[in-house]
Image (cartoon, helix red, strand yellow):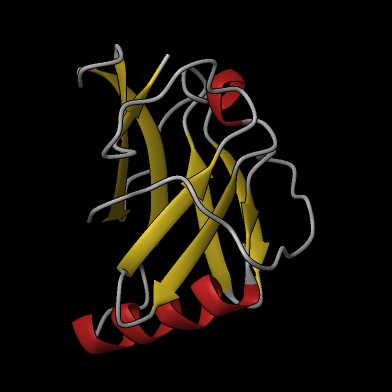
Length: 122
């Protein structure tokens, strides 16, 4: 999934420190339903890489890892691992469906610098 730094509307802050907007929650729920599985959750992680040092990863996951922080947004579970949590505290995950952009977006107040494509930060 592609990501870019942008947000329009925010949901409520969760124990993960991540905010999933209502629009993004509806999209995630629809994608999980398309998979035909009820054991998937949206995992948001930070991994080394990208031109700025760290890269976001958003993917569906059925695993539970030691130290995971889980939040529920209208029936959609969002999971953040222990190592990624400090980098994502206060980040807003939204979904853009416009003529000029489509996909999940991340607005992260912890990102000191980010690259032009919005995929990585430090």
